[in-house]
Amino acid sequence: MKYELLVTDLDDTLLKDDGTISDKNKKALRTLIENGGKVALASGRAAPTMVDVIKMVGLTDQKHLAHNGLSIFNIDGYEKISGFLPKNEIIRILDLLKENNIEANVFTPKGIYHNHSFELAKVMDKYIKGYPLIDVDYTPYDVEGIFLIYGIINNEEERALMRSWSNDVIETGEGNGFVIFSLRGEGKYKGAKRLSEEFGIDESKIVCVGDGGNDLQMLREAPLGIAVKNAVEEAKEAAKIVIDKTNEEDAISYVIEKYFLGEKL
Image (cartoon, rainbow, N blue to C red; front, side):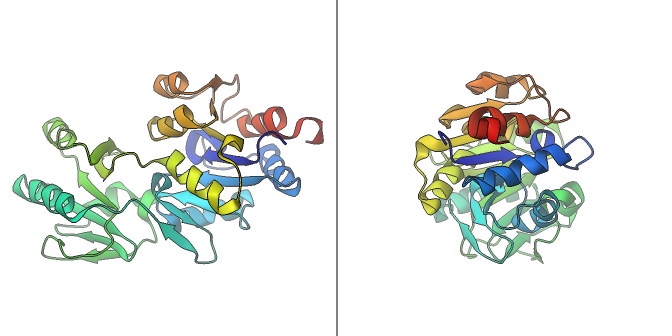
């Protein structure tokens, strides 16, 4: 096969609008694996929240990417996290959040530390469900292994303020109601490259498929970045190819047939 590793986004790419997977997509994924390929689901969700989806789509024997590529994991308990934030930047961001009375939510391998309320859990249930929440009454500067910091957005002024705190080391992104602080250069494609190294697959054999803002890096940097028809305009512009199939039209099956297996599917 010209390509050997398929990395696909979940929502609005592999999954249908109702959160399920079509039989055609599910069969195509298994056929790719049976023919020697590898498949990784890539999501902004935490690893525990992806387990049910992994079981539903039939990929329990594969490794996957959580936290937008920062975590490589499988459902048997293996997890390798990268992109840990430097101590001076942790202090800077947490101080700024505290000074502006914005909830600080700190992601570590042990769980999420938060120092105000469980507001994050209400906003992000599908992203962090099953991930340990550690309630603290202080800003956790001394916690080891911080790889993400989230700030809850209460208004547009806070959104703009937090986005202005990026620098040469830290970049900011956004989710549904929160600003994300992460190590600059990290993302789904960085995770895909680490995963290809674990598999012993050459980087030139990676295909990435996505639709949204957190897919831009992998669509832009992958040897073959493919946007589905229903992707946002930014994703279409970043991709090398835009296919004429939506997530409701078995887009992943189409990609596997056209770029991996051909008549074998």
